[in-house]
Length: 516
Image 1 (cartoon, helix red, strand yellow):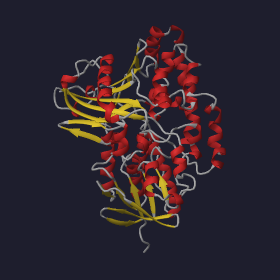
Image 2: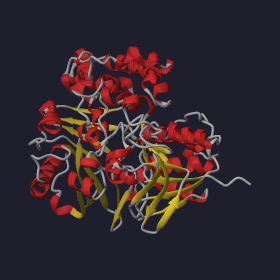
Image 3: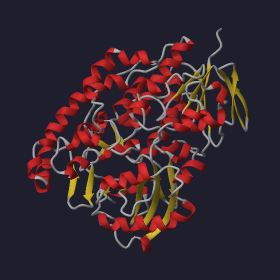
């Protein structure tokens, strides 16, 4: 009887968890190792005194990919992970003046746009139509691996080429479509989901904003971490051997082939290795430079990286029912704000901030009469101009003052629980290279075959999942990276992968939950 093939997965983030269930479903023996004491990676939960926060991602977009993974396992995502569609999906407060409650209702958007810029009425509909075609052309590119430069000439890539417009950034493309600069920002700030400035991000990624309006912004009850916890439970039900608080400390190689990993608890042989931990950090700490031809230490150090984030997780007394589930304050001089982050690498006086007030939708996240506030501020990754041991308390005060601009006042005295993360914490405590939480930049020289490959090109039997490989950052594409990489892995081992199982998208309820 043939011996069951064994696979090790490093990291229990979204990509690692999805890979584990897909591989177990294909009949492989899977061991999953996670350095933290709970699953989720950057999508884990923080729980303190009855308050529950998502560490990183706070909403779910385009659930089709994970829905198809569940369907391949014979499960129903909608039944197992209840979600609420948020509408309005977020409020934009412009430091330059004005407000926009963003909704998929085109007529309502036009009504609001008319108050900001009458000449732009009707252009939102044109934006959706243009990006609907762009997304349809580019979706096949996101759903196939790019293992060599020859793949750039594939039917899928050539079909998407007219929509890539390499001479445009997101900002320049939208500035050509909207008269009012605030509206160009309203449909371009989503570049921050990739940790980039829209003035530097390829125009292709206007599809991010489109996907929010076309496919919805969802809140999984219990937060995004609840999705990770459900995946982990499914993995264990399927026989995956999950090891928490047990980081991989060494990868053993025979030539260029990974043959085993070592942890504090022992040595574990493997026929293949899936790496979901931070790409650059893992390569520099666990893979000798001599084995890395394409991604040597020098190339890793010279690559472009996303911004980082300054985080406050606040459990507060009282309810904030007048503040929407998601609110983004856009700095008065947004372009300068982003240049401070990406070019000058300094802290700005008027930072843009994102605030999640999730308890207006999901009161289970805080004790009765209390609320959770999740505050994210884009800041530079490792910078010689910012000493966080000095700047953190001062910047915290600046951020609390920014909360007043979106209607959250008298905050300091109401804080009952507080956690803070700086870029230093992302780097030193979370093992993220340079604290760049969105991984490698998504510029034209770090996309498709120019990104580290799903079947990692420098080693044998090693597969990458997560934001550091193709298709890139963000939960939907990270789940897609798991499908691509596990399919390649199964092919190498001569095992049929789980088939891709289409699902019919069904509408989800949009009403917020009622507080008890």
